Length: 236
Image (cartoon, rainbow, N blue to C red):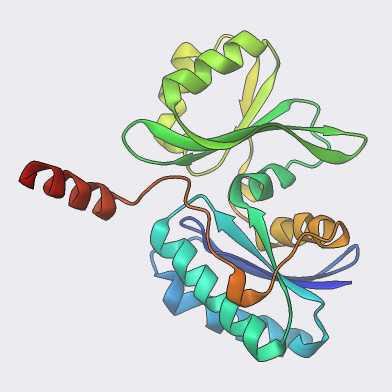
């Protein structure tokens, strides 16, 4: 089975091709460029380097959210276009699950955190059991203090990863009461290969959709939508 994967849910832009248990190619960039500038050139580069024919992929996996509203929309538009051109289904993978897949077979509770602004994070709780990722708490937006309280109550060792770590590291160190660690650089951000592997599991379970039907999962409204609603409420 060959999966093309895309992750543009955060600061990182990443594309990958995975075939069964082999990572054929992955191109990941964490730099100050918009994903609209990077995704398609990155995809073109790995296709050239591997002499791949995208018509041979079985499906296209994408980080479906939560994350950056702009990044998610760019990723969605990219995979919907590819799905139409290649006539391939789309596998939407929850962003936070993709992050958790980076820490395969970790013995600790896995807690990815993405900065959601206003002292909130997008997060979820995961563990590996029998070499398979298990969802302990599904992804959601939550206040950092509330997340730390939840982890303290669970009483388990926990490992953090994601772009929320540098933002909230000092708060975590101050308030966490259970054993904890922070994932190292090579596995602490989004990777399309992880989305591909998790997507493959979904695909084998029959969880995928037509590209026309795919939509990102934002988990909450955008700042622009909140501001518009606030303005409308003042006019009433």
